[in-house]
Length: 260
Image 1 (cartoon, rainbow, N blue to C red):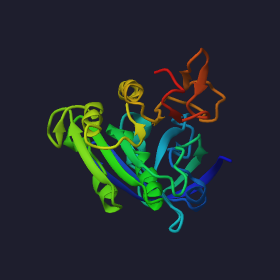
Image 2: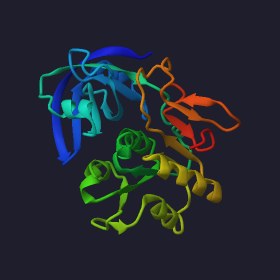
Image 3: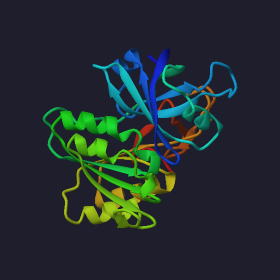
Image 4: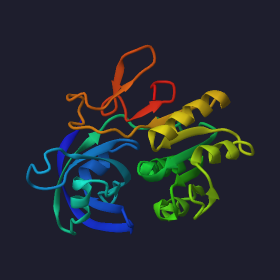
């Protein structure tokens, strides 16, 4: 059950001009969290800004009682978040939503993590759990430029193979991550795909998954207010008509469950 937690900032590290990694002391959250879930953060002790900020859980360490959030400074709330110092108390609501469905122990096959920009945020926590299950895991990471390829070393340290591409060719292959995946599949056996990134990227993945008969799970990013399904602000169309809510039905969906 989601609950409000009082957490404390341990560190708030700038990784690139607009990317930050926030480490929180959050024992209860770390013990409850599942890969792919998210939290809603109140960035001040007041109601200005009024709404909480939804952030993916980047990593969790129940043994240390810590939760890591990876975010970009894209608006007032995240700019305020970037100014928080160690020792600051933060009100965090979570864990929220339905996360990734992991393979069962002993299930064969490989896993491909597909990240577009800050869509890498929920994938490190997932990668750790896959590696624990002895599943061969690769990360295909696409971004606009080299500066946006943050956190690669964290994946490599746990044994994940990382291949990068950038739109401007400043690091890795020049191009987008869907083309990178298509080329990757020419020489690798298709495994489960776990993806997070911009909607156009996920929509293109749906097309490739259908073409290549891939099993894919998509973590959607959406504007939301409550995070609990009450405001209906994060609706996404589903096949056959109607809507699902990213905050409660997702944020993770099978590739066939939503229309993007």
